[in-house]
Length: 238
Image (tube, rainbow, N blue to C red; front, side):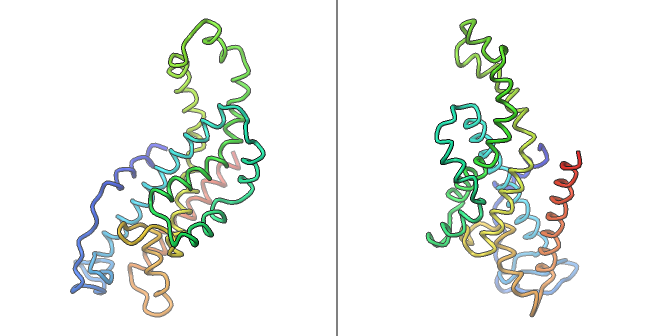
């Protein structure tokens, strides 16, 4: 979990400078992956776009886990509505919504994706918390007259520890959700680069005039997909 949180710093990095007169240069010692159409160094853009997408996924995963923890600790109100929404995969909900709005901003995408992922994370998290919540230890502070602030301070580390194991699942959902929407041109505009936007621009060129940056972007996505499948298979095997 911790190494994924490091990528939050990438959200603060500035954009690369534009130099259209040096656009679409081939690979060289100075530019190992060439340059894109706007003259940005391909390798630097790949690293920045990838890190920014990973940072966005970390931020959305934290939001989703927070919302899931609040829902899991609360009363089971609107259980039927949550079950109905949970039956719809997040992307199938986001795609028509983004298409109707002509794209989603970073803020809107993060909030919606975090809320939809929280719906998926609530049942396993509730299953972990509920047995202990019904035990005597959970009620002890209330019985002894402890305030809600005191109970929050005592139990927050334990709830966070139970929640942390679900972070990789939320992180992967947020990463692929953002990449898919931007790949389809339905995510935030081109003002802020990301892996999805890079794929949107470079993948269509691979069949005609593929660039080193486009091939490197594809390899990065395949590597992330393989890593996700490997970690998922390992968690199932355990």
